[in-house]
Length: 145
Image (cartoon, rainbow, N blue to C red; front, side, top):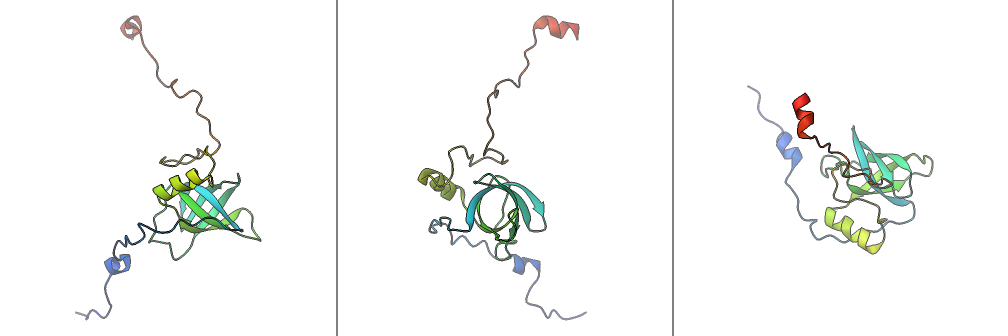
C-alpha cells in the first residue's frame, strides 16, 4: 500500500467555517463598482445579476470567494464593472442579510429592492394581483364533478 504523502484530503481543502467576519465594516461602492442582486446561479463560478443601474450582467465570482463564500439567488453583491465589457462584471463581495438591510436604510439600495427573498427579480417587479391565485368552488360545482 502506498504511503500518504499529502497533507490531507477534500475536508482539509474545505477548511473550517471561519465566522470571524460577523462584525465586519460595511463597505460602500466606489467608482467602477455597482450593487447588484443575484438572479440565478449559472455554475462554473458565474452568476447572472441585475445591477441597481438597471443592467443585467453576467458576473464572475473571484477566486478568493470561490468555494468559500456561498452565493445564492436573491443575495445582494458588490460587483466591479469592466471598462471593456459592459455586459460582464466581477463579484467583489457578498453582503450578509443584515448588511443589505443597512445599505437599504442608508439609501444605497432603492426601496423597490426585495432583500430576504429566496428568488430575485424584485427590483422592477410589481405585485398588483397577489390575492387572485385562489379559486373558490360552490357545493353545486363539487357535486357536478
